[in-house]
Length: 120
Image (cartoon, rainbow, N blue to C red):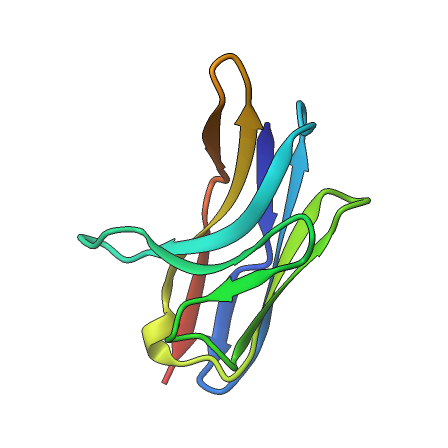
């Protein structure tokens, strides 16, 4: 599975950005997709996830400001980020989880990361 993320950039505080991540390759079996972010020297943290059925989960810090969505026909996940704050500045990574059998396990795939910078 290959994940190609796009949409990062520079925006002023209070502004909006939309991230996209398209999955390709051996995509059969992909279950949840989502976005994580990682600041220098810190652990990667969950931003938002969405299952194939559309169930979403958000970090408390982005709840109400960010919206994750998914187009299963295009194998693409989106992250609409509104009311951006300087503390949202970091690299954002797309994630896809795939369930495989023999034995049954979950494999995580990661995109290349896209930089989001919010100026004050």
